[in-house]
Image (spheres, rainbow, N blue to C red):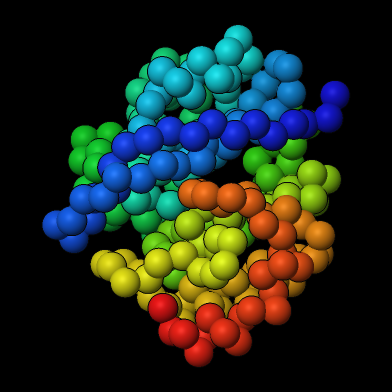
Length: 209
């Protein structure tokens, strides 16, 4: 059975550098009727577990370690037995939210996470955060970009641990090289495609945000 993608939107708060903002996050569940992975366990472990249902949750993959993407990960892992995966370059950010609980395993560029008919290739795409990753499944013609690429441009780089030239390099070299029809499923907001975003790279650089 081919993998399918489900979106759950959860609401909570993002906090960094002394500020706090209300946010809605996309939680992506990828798999089949028997097995699944969660991409970004945001805010509400109960709602995510309910959406997963009776499927075996094998992995909770964190696109980066800002609190709004990882706050429910330990509770969801405890409830389901799933492994929490994070890129090691984001451990300092992770510790701001979960000082007493480390991730279970480290993501590496080029690694493939398999579950329920999906094959998610890890692309290390720093800039929004040092350990930010995207997850590309060519069979699903989909890339999960977290907060690296949105409809209309790059993720924010105005706070600690972020860097605008780095995110531009990541998007140019790792994402815009994917087939133009590739669906871009983001950490917040609506989906887009690589083909829709690629023509605007020079505008983003000129804007410099």
